[in-house]
Image 1: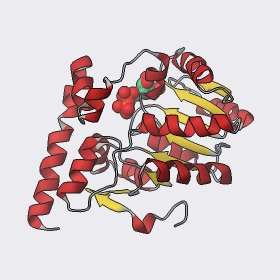
Image 2: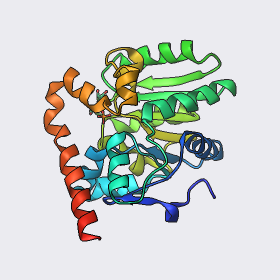
Image 3: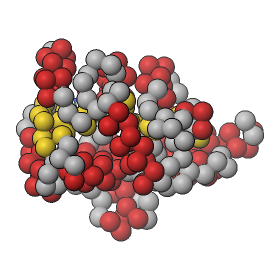
Image 4: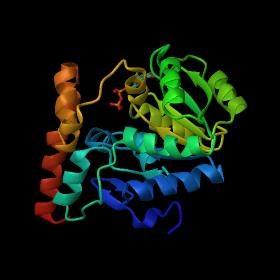
Length: 247
Ligand code: UDP
């Protein structure tokens, strides 16, 4: 199978997922990165799938990605309900860490783009310490007015991997629009990952992650997300409806 085989994707309520396990996902991302074709990876959760149903630009940006992996248990349940199970839940942050580990062993470079001022720098310090050999090509916060300057800065740094952390669907749209313009081996839309690496946000304890309850922990920590999270039951109801109707 080639690095990007979109025909083989598994449709989950309008978003086509690559049915890959962690090793396969990392391998495909690696192939895309070293080919330096400006490809991008997205990690949709049910909230993003629901967003794609009403935002055509987001839908195009998400489905236009070169690798689409299932971030979170909601997508896994959805696929199961639709009788097209996916191999594995692949949280974007775990996938990114696996890729960074491999990049570090080859002395490759990373540019961190997004989050509030200071966060990307702090995340860069943590990652440089954690992954000896990884080169930090640059950082930029995600609250910008002049996009052209940021593209210029990234292109001068020419990183192997560009983490785009602007929240969804902004980051997916940004990557789709900049494909072919940004000189990076690979881009990945990585949401709140920089906040986690910088220590400004906390991930759920491993037990919660394993139980598929990371979303609940996040809700407990950030109750303001309740509105956004209502998309999860809506998504599951829609998948059940689709299964019952058989289309
Ligand atoms: N963000 C940004 N620019 C913006 C809006 C958001 O850099 O214009 C950042 C925000 O600071 C946060 C990340 O994007 O670090 C989004 O985090 P969130 O937890 O909402 O992401 P999710 O993974 O849920 O999409």
